[in-house]
Length: 287
Image (cartoon, rainbow, N blue to C red; front, side, top):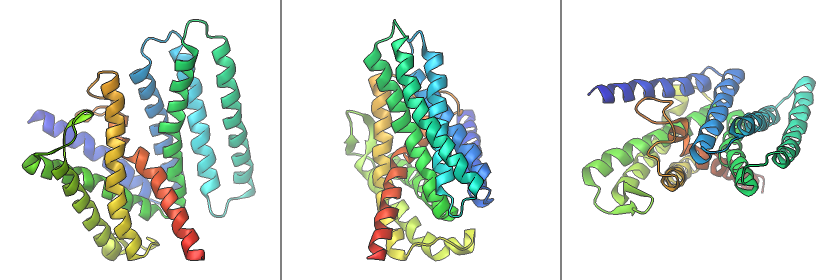
């Protein structure tokens, strides 16, 4: 019982932070929260995959710097009407992203003991798997913070539906090699919860969260379908990483839930897919 209460309390705090960052319409609150997630995710990934590196701390610091610069560049680029000051900062952060790449390669030359290929691969994974998808959230946020909140709600309801339906009816394993507990029944339950959420958010989202949801009904229904599909793949991708290094959780940051990667694993695949969807939708509207 105590574990359930701890899990519920920590999960509620996590959800409350994200909802506050999106509903208060403070870009810098959003920036601060997800920049922190970027740093925590990179640190956690390095501890997950590279526990024996002698130069781990130096590499982590440099990779965190690169991840925050990438997130910052996306943040400034996403603003619809940037000030000249913001444009200058965007150019600076972009230059620092390039500097990070050069510095990371040079650093490896002076690291004697580590496997260079493995060390490079871990840094690339940190940027591509953690930093870049989180940076892409800026594109959705500056399109509509309410739309981003709707996507989070779909992800959370997909998790809830998959757990409830899977626990009650789960018989057929979804991907036993990677995640033995997931079932096809749970997957379809999560998809149903998410699709219904997309339908309801279209009709009641503006009443609950205010205007500027922006997308037509058909787009919300499509989101309600693609979010759970890619959220499930995102969950499986992180499970694959954990199974490869033989750990149950990616970390211990969030009591009852594991690490930050355990909480954002779905988001890391959903985010780039939603950005691609919005870009294609914009192209189709212009045509």
